[in-house]
Image (cartoon, rainbow, N blue to C red; front, side):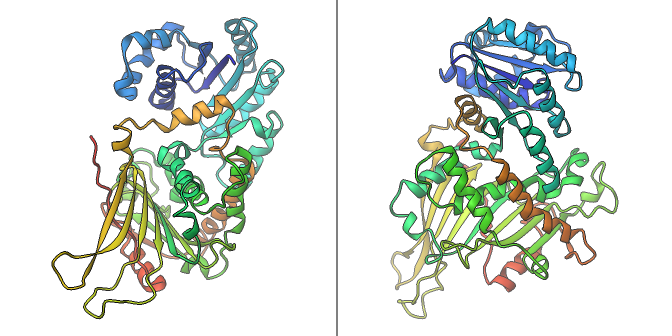
Length: 486
């Protein structure tokens, strides 16, 4: 079906850095309908050709080796520009008229992408409805909304209510770019397409699960956003809980958007709510040294740049298995990884000379060294019966010849095709906030646990290692991934 993609906030960084390069790459791969239009909308004044020219350089940079001048010239003829202010109803009427003109009376589906400040989401939705742009009598109408989706449960619920006045839930695509990564999607295949993993993916064989999202960078000039958000809102409520849901969910009856999201939501329903002393015993919060000197940060800020949590899923599969979640700025390296730590063998067969076994471990590297490693014990050559940890290593980049598609390619294409499997549902968003909000409230209370300091370049505060070792008798998997491709 012919379709039109309307990008609000088209003069912003996300459009030039991610959205247009992703759409261009899909065009080069013949993934888009030949009758396709892309309309940028923002307050800046551009003619169509000026807008196309402004995107050419950034697309060449971010599309990489896929870019060539001839195909760009062909693609750019599908790109248009319509100036408009989200707060002006007349501009939406003008947009409706322009879309009718370029669609020339065809029945065309439309995807509206809100690449704007989150404060404008509700107004943009309201204006789309008032201008009749949400009516789907002549083709589908879908809206993609970037994170953050609210700042707490109350605001997320209010935003959901306002959107539902204009769009049905099946028309709403709340995007989390982590879910578009090939390595995240491959967790589904790893678990549900291989008979060797699913039988042991449970409390009988798994000791604990670690999910780490670490960033080397500090906040830079983002204090205006970051100091009011912190690592919990920025990473845990969306990215990390999404990874936890996919790791812990039950297999759906089939790979269908509604059924996949049903199973993910069941995981959030099973998460044990923290109460009382658990806010201190099962969480660690930290702030990197120098944060208070960053431009725009208040001198007495208690905003966390590091957090570690222990959560439990109280269901038949995972009862008693702790999920350790952590994320931080200014960490040792940039990595996103899921570690499935299996239980130790029940009996040491080879006597006292053998070192204590570390247990088998499955490491799923989400980024930047996309791949899967299985750690197992093997004998040291030419020795007594001594063992060491060996690794079976699968590298996505080697099998894909280094051409891993950007996450936005998959997510934009899914939205066009109407597949919501990798997008968050309203109840999913609200349940995630229901987990995060009480922790943040405890951290802002007079009884808040100490905010530990840590030096940039480490794996967070030393107290987080002590917390893991002394209270939980485990250790973090602190290994920076090795990149095997340019």
